[in-house]
Image (cartoon, rainbow, N blue to C red; front, top):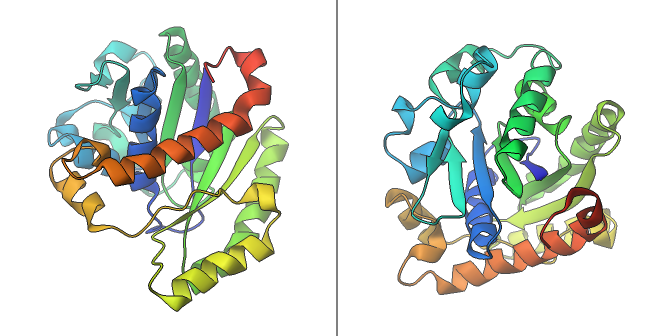
Length: 263
């Protein structure tokens, strides 16, 4: 199994939108995918199932590792796509325990998921690189970083990469898949200029070619509890996430042979 953390230095960059729709794109391609909501705000669960506040989930497992995984995994209409909500115990972490406090339990969770036969575990984390988010990154095979295409956000990227270098000390095998530009507005000069500035700031292989546009479809999809590709007029948005999936698969190819990942 490959585990990918979706993380960012700051909030409001579209992490949950990327996580949901990327997980759906992998699942559509036949990859057995588990989407885990590791954000105490529970955004993934709220976007996909209105009952998420009642479900046991990831933080309940951290509080009690004896909890059976079967109680946490929620199937969707797509056979290859399941999710784990943030859970009832998510409030206990909102104050933030120190990084490393839950490392062993996060790793035990990922081992249990792998043993269930999933090919991919995609983890939507809280903003910042500390607390449980740091433990998730330190336990994952790879990380991708959504970044809003706006000037202030781009200035925070070097700090984010410094933080990732520190995390690599805890997890030397961590593969940084790259930064994915989100909320891109092609009709707004500041947005396109910020995107261009990021591509100048980072090596070419550190920025995904695929960009996620700002689109009201995402809000409509969330309101209906669906990935955007399931909407009647969502085919165009689905193409974007299929493209992002293909890029990630190409970046993971060297790991395929080690992990048995179906590229």
